[in-house]
Length: 69
Image 1: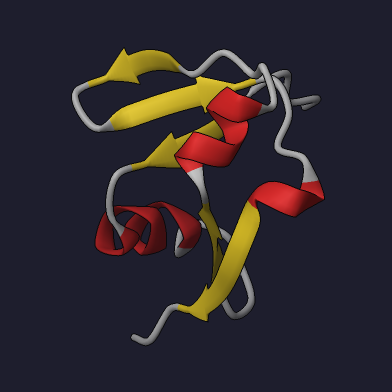
Image 2: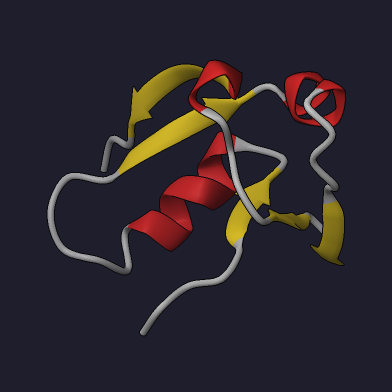
């Protein structure tokens, strides 16, 4: 399956819940939404707490968190 959108959520716990659907140790990237906007990237609302973007530039990644079980 080729993904066309990057899915973003508003909190780490939701992101970890989704990430646990896959194998391995889940990691969550913390993204700076203002950086995305300032880079001209449209952030679209897909669901109540889910947003999507076409691309996240590396400069907008602020941190990486490991999901604990």
